[in-house]
Length: 348
Image (cartoon, rainbow, N blue to C red; front, side):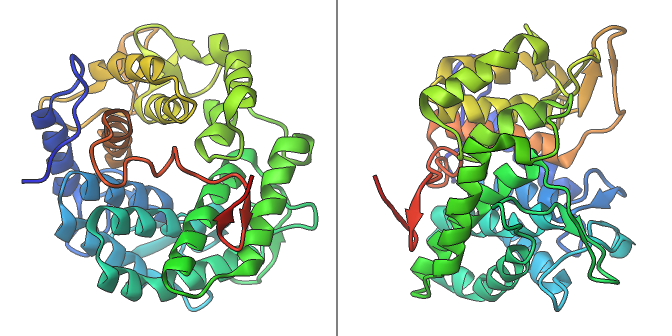
């Protein structure tokens, strides 16, 4: 049996396994992992949920999810932003959504060591990253998306998506190196993106009131060390609600499980594992008896909102538990992002 992550006093291995089972129960026959049964599937959250299946030993289910990604990738390397039960609801392109396949594929390979899986998914990853590279601006930032029908790109660059792309390029380079096909242009793009995130954050759209814009530069790996700790400290009191989790939006009395667990992953990557554990513990009020997690809580009136148990919230809990407990072979997928690369190799 696959060893399950556990956090002493917070989550048992049996509870994490139940969360993995709850995610698998939401999977459609096609392999898609929607937000909730009957809900939308987007290519980013789909991959995050597949990663949780890999962690909890549900390898066949995870590979069915990646097979779904392979089948639904369009000729240009993209996926629709939103689908419901196989029907396209938003045909446009989100560059970050497309890039994230590299993170999931590398993570699954770390856990399984399955070279046949990597061989099979490499063309999908390559096509996705080849497309994503076209969205990079001269300043190093990536445009957030484009119109799939006309090919027009939306020039705005958003910090959350760019920070996630930074991690995705690192994973794509690792896959390329493993395949013996290093991509020097990706390393160049990675360096330019890291530089603009760290040195010219004003080039992005102004940080919003959403917590993701706050912690994602650390979670994605572009900002670490003392700079990362200072970055987190600056807005800690705006978002963190003791004993309940973190706000999704800084001025609203609404805490969300996924954002809380992603912040926990960011803190763990900074070496602050004690606070990461506290954060995961703080959102256990969202846990359902079946092992799934409600998306959030409006703490001013004690009501869960939205009234849904989202697949990706459960996935974020599993990934945070795995990172904190150092359980699976993929537990360092967020912690080990390389900040500086030359042809896929770390430099000092």
